[in-house]
Length: 114
Image 1 (cartoon, rainbow, N blue to C red):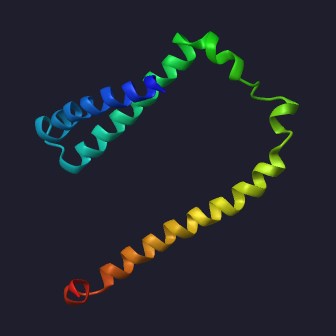
Image 2 (cartoon, rainbow, N blue to C red):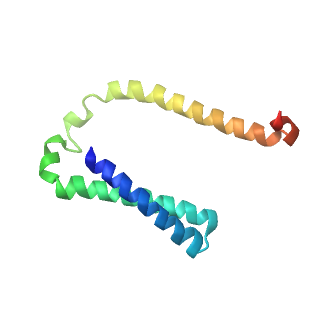
Image 3 (tube, rainbow, N blue to C red):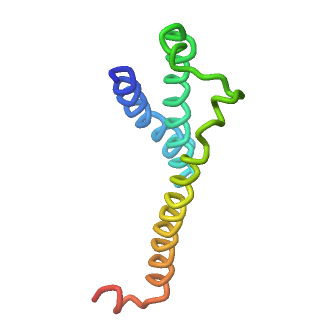
């Protein structure tokens, strides 16, 4: 939607400010870069949550479901059948990248250059 695009654009521009503040002004280095990224993500999330839950609450009310009801738990088996293999694939992919990183660290400079 347009709101998500505008929010992303604004927080992206503000990210430059956060990087300047945390990395250069406060001299936090890599830790400052992580802090700037977290501030950007949290701000992006907060703006969109405020939009949905405060500004357009009436519009989005029709899409809300009660958190704890029979309807909430009625189709869980079909979701679980999809979630378990998907989670396994994501874990395998992540672990594969981790193994590649570990093996690259074991190799010497000459082998990596080849």
